[in-house]
Amino acid sequence: MEELAKTEGCLICGKPLVYKQAKYAALCCGCGQLFMTDAECEDGHFICDVCHSEESLPVIYQYCVFTDSHDPFEIARGIMRHPAIHMHGPENHVLIGSALLAAWKNSSGNIDLPEALSVMKERGSQLPGGICGFWGNCGAAVSAGIFLSIVTEGTPLNAASRKLSNLLTSECLRQTSKYSGARCCKRDGFLAIQTAVVFVAESLNVKMELPESLTCEFFPRNNECLKKDCPFYRL
Image (cartoon, rainbow, N blue to C red; front, top):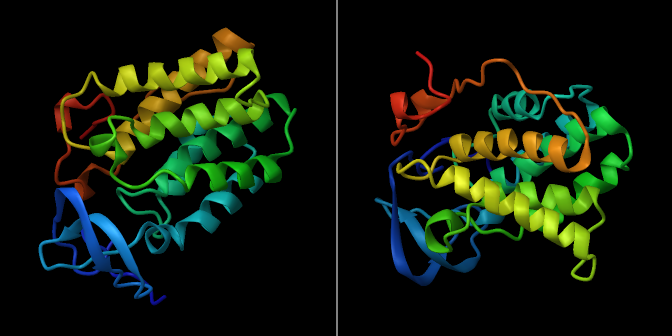
C-alpha cells in the first residue's frame, strides 16, 4: 500500500471522520477490499484497520524489543513520535500493552519479550477502531488488561490472573471516564499506563517507573484536545 498522507483525521485527505450507528459496506482506499464500517471521512474515504496499522505495528515491535527503559510512559511516547504512528487509531490498542510489556521485562526480566509482543499484537489487533464510543470499552484499557493477562499467563480458567487483568481494565476505564471529552488515544493511553504502573506495583510488586511530570506533546494534532482540562496538557 502506498504511504498514507495524513496522521490524523482522514489518512487520505486529513478531513474529519464521520461516524454512523449502523455499519455499511465500503471499499478501503488502501487495499481496495470491501469491509463493513461505521466511519468514513467527509469526502467518503475509508481506511480499514489493517491498512491503518500496517506501517505502525512493526515500529511498535522494534522499539519495544530494543529499548532498555523501565518507564512505559516514555516508551509509549517515544513510539508515538515516529511518523508511522497516527494520532488516533487501532494501532494504539497494541502500542499501550507493548510499552507495558517492554517496561515489565526491563523491570523484572521474567518474560520472553519477543513472544509476548507477538501475542500482544495478535490480541490487540482484534480490537476495532472506535470501540471506546461504540462498545463502551476503551481499547487502551483493554490493551493494559491484555498486558497483565500475558505476564500472569492468564487463561479463562486461571482465576487469579483473570481477576487481576479484569480489575486492571476496569480501573483504567474508571480513570478514562473521569474526562468528558471526545476520544483521544493519547490521553486514554497515558491514563492506562499510569494506572497499570501503580496497579502492578501494588498487586505484583513489580516496580516500573514513571516520569515526575507526565506531559503530552501531541495536542496540536488533536482537534478535540481538552487542553487545560486534560491531565497531560502543558503549554
